[in-house]
Length: 522
Image 1 (cartoon, rainbow, N blue to C red):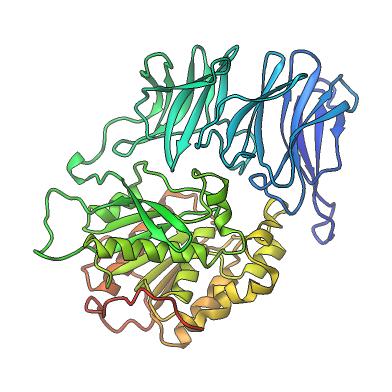
Image 2: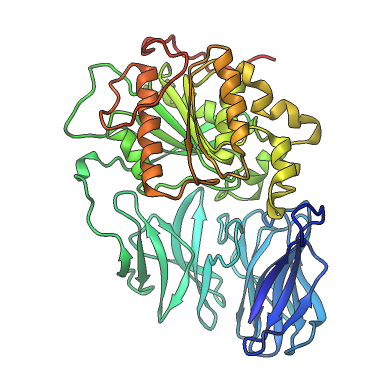
């Protein structure tokens, strides 16, 4: 068995960092052989049928989407790798998911600006297909598969162009990709399943499902999930793709207009807007059916999921917009989205809210502190203290902030240091066992806002960590968040929401003045 081993110090008080190594485990005896060591991180060990082993490695301060190296070495049981060759990669090239196809090694590299497919053998490297689209994504964990070898010389891959996903068959010899007419808007990690591929497929108007796709016809055999909608299609708001200008170029979002066939808005009234900021921040928004989104759109809200600069699915240059600019670029893009939708008469700029979790919660708090576009916000275990994040997080992300925010800007970009600049109502959702964003960090922000008379609420969930897992807590967070915004904007809150207090909220504020949509001045 091949594995990536992470060894931690014997005592949590020791300052030493965890150690990662590439190892082989004898499943009969339990003996462990170190195949390679010396790099900060390892991933994707792949054994050929001819005694060779491919693997990825990278070092601090890089994340795997910044720069990795692909190696191949001779592999024999019970001994370290020998005759190791560097195939591709470096500190400015991200290589992901090596896969053997006979004697060739297929991999994805963003050396040309997009994660394209390449093949290596003893004669050198060949670019399988030149395409301004992504055939891989950010390696947030071990084991992700954006493509599979379906047959010798034939790959099935997820292709992402400007944030839109599709499934394609790639003929290595011809250098040609042909689309598979599959009924999905998104494709999870792929796995070979007979003559087809299995994945979790997402759709804009139906629940996600685990399906096996016939790559010749696109037909699907559903293995699990899916099924019929538990609500009428007349209340499901399908995602619309929108593109709008920003200071760094075009930005993108998935926009969901309000939809409920049973009710109609007042003549001339524009809907309130909820902007959602995805996590990561090296992540992306999705058009897939989200009950959180539908909870809002079925009640008269518009929702925009913003792929701010730094998101994946648009190439390396778009992803690198956030380098040195976290808390600025992402905030500017969210403000630009509000401005664009308001200018086109699709939302009411006086009733705009923003929400996000984890890194998305950081963008939410930064937008509330450093811009004036939003009238309320919801932070779900959001990062408020960048210095604490860099000092206290796990090894994988311990140097993540280095590229996103310069050391000299850490304090200036940390919302917890600028709570005095937040003037609109905020609600916090926090797990008591969160080690990434400790409860005291959220409590400090709550107290700072409350002491200044800013309307604020906070819900603590016992036993939850960085991200909620229990269904009852997820439901409570969604319903309470909506009820908070309803009370802030003067709507009637739902009847089935448990009581919660909003400090300093004296009355409804549906008649707030229109947002200026300008950045706050220091």
